[in-house]
Amino acid sequence: MPQRVTTFVGPYTSVPRRVAWARRNRGRQRLLAVLIFAAAPTGLFWWWYATAVVDHLGTRPSTLHWAIPTAALWVTLSPILMQQGEFVLERLLADFSRHGRYAGWDLTAMQRRLDRWDRAYFWTVLPVGLAPSLALAVSFEPLTALIPVHTTGQRISGLVVIGAVGICSASGIWGITKVIALIDAACGTAGLRWSAFRADRAWGIRELYGFAWLEGLIFSCGALFVPAMLGILPQLRPVSLVIVWLFLLLLSLGGLAVFSIPAWRLYRLSRESQERALDQLAPAIEDAALAVTAPNRLVPERMVGELSRLDLALRLRQAVAATEPAPFSPGFLGRAATTLILPIALTVAQIVGSR
Image (cartoon, rainbow, N blue to C red; front, side, top):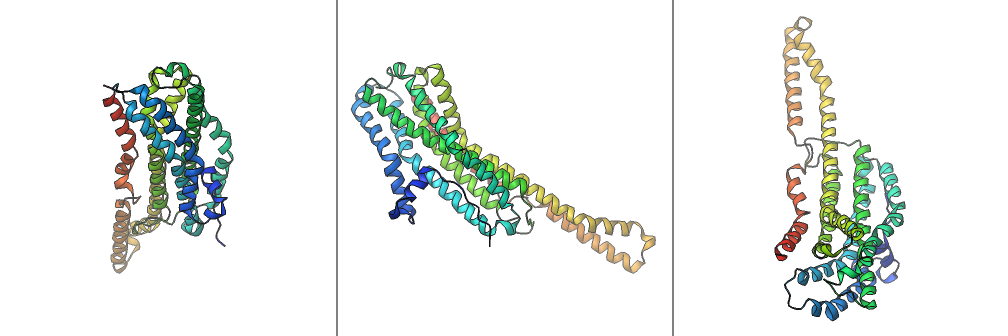
C-alpha cells in the first residue's frame, strides 16, 4: 500500500470542512471561508470607511483615497487565498503519495519535516499575527492626523480588522516557510530516477516547481495591503514602525522567496542527478579508453570495436552533459518576475500618487 503524506491545515480550511453541507464540495468550503473569516472584518472595514474615512479625507489629494479600498480587498481575499494555498498543497501531497516513492523521493523525510512545521503553527501564527494589532494600538494618537480612529467604536473596529488580517497574513508567512522547508527536505533526501532524454527529467521536479510558483503568486497578493501601510508610515511610533516594516518586507518579497528558493534547490537537485548520470557512463568510457590506448593488448579486429564503443560512449556523455538539467530552467526568470508584478505596481502607484 502506498505511503500517504499528509499535513495539518489551518482553520481557514479545517473549519469549513466541519460543516457537513460543505465537507465534499470545495466551492462551498470557499463560501464558508468568506462568511466565517472575511465577512465580519470586511463589513467593519467598509462601515468605518463609509461613516468616517470619506468625510475625513474629503477632497484633499491623498493616496489613501485608493490605498484604503485596495487594502479592503486583502481583508476579503486573504482567507480564501490561504485556503486555496492549502488546497494546492493537499493536491501535491496526494500526487506524491501515489507516485513519489517510485520516482525516488523520500516520503518519510517529507512527512517528518511537515510534522515539525505543523507543530509550530499556533506558537508562531498567534504572536506574529497579533503584532499588527499591537502596532495599531500604540499609534492611535499620531494616526488621527491621517485617518479617523478617534472613537472607541472606530478603534475596536480597527483592532478587529487588523487582527484578522494579521492572523491570516501570519498564517501565510508560516505557510511559505513550510513550503520552503518541505521542498528542502524533499531535495535533500531524494534519490531520483533521472533521465536526460525525457521531457520530465524526473517525476516530481516539475510538480514541486509549479507548486512553489503558485504559492508564490498567492502570497504576492498580500501586496494589496502595502500602499495603505506605506501611507501611514510617517505617523507611526518606533515600535509600530519596526513591526510594519517587517510586514512590508514580507508581503512585498515573500512571494519571490517562496518561489525562488525552492526553484534554486530543485535546480541543484537536478544538476546533482545529472552529474550522477554522467558518472554512470564513466566506467564504460574509462574501460574503452584504456583498451584503445594500449593497442598491444588488442588484435586489430577488436581495436575497431573498442574505438566504436568509446566513440558511442563519448557521444552519449556529450548529449547528457548538454541537456538542461531541469526542464523549467529557461522560464525561471519570467516566473520569478510574476511574483513581483503586484508589489512593484502598487509601490510605484503609491510613490507617484504621493507627489
